[in-house]
Image (cartoon, rainbow, N blue to C red; front, side):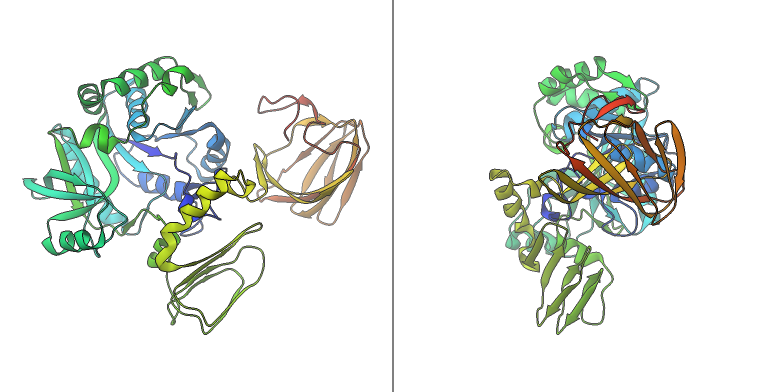
Length: 471
């Protein structure tokens, strides 16, 4: 069985923590792990699971690879989409890649879901595997606990086995009255968006019901190029693919759809209210994360990042503080955060893309302050990484180590810097910064000169194949 982890969403309803450059699946929203890492850990615990395939995009590849290496999942293969085309084409290219060696079952999982009962999940996968081996396209239906209007529903059909049923129909997200009727009937399940299907079965069904998607995804895979553990799909072919979900393109069309009813403590973390639902709460029903002081506050989710957040006399609220934006919303309106994100996109606001920090192959940095002739940066270098060997013609630099140990190479001399030690680099001097330790290296960089932008970089050596400019 090959796990296929789909990591293409932006998580707009979890803004301002989730941004286009750092979507929710790459964030530690439920525990200390990112949701992507939790998903990979979940698949690694399955006895029959082979190395996973992750389908994502170019922008997120470096961040995912860093996390894979640091967490022991470096055997995963990344399939990189040049553009997003929803889940039907994404699963198709993963199926073609898996079939290059064999014809395995594909366990298709979104990267941004959470499951609290791993044992029940493993049991459900086992039941689904038997049905998928027999030729069924199996989805996992979640036993509903409330009349949820944010999920699609699956109507349960006749038994295939004691643990697997046929699917009678898929239903769109309902209104509250309809969702209540579904819940009371006992004949409907939440559509989890997780599937178990044999690779060749999926391709055959896609060719039968969405031949255009089948053809362009096959061409995109056939024309792909491999770079290490990254498979770059053929851009022109994949771009021609029609955007469609696996539900619409295949599952709603096939006569072989099956469902495993299960209750593994699943959530798609579709909003801040979802996080409040699953989190441990204090005696007043609050989830308080970070430096938070609450007075007369109840049934609220308050998340502080780098500063104190205080609440007085509020209830049923969502408060999320980040370095450049603050969200305040009623819990019942949490789904409407997407409206804010849509407006930010329309106005081309930078807050929709990132929180001001920028990722690099060696880690990330954020701009503390900048002005005419100067710039102050906060750098975090991941363990074992280094910047390119570089030269700046129009600025001097000072590096101050805040935390960790740094190796700095300047003018051909390599020296060690401890916390509170600094080094001055004059214009024109070739240099490189390294983190030789096992912990993140934290550095303050001060640039002074006539050009302190990202364009004033001449690289002499770069392990990531970069040339002029951009960090």
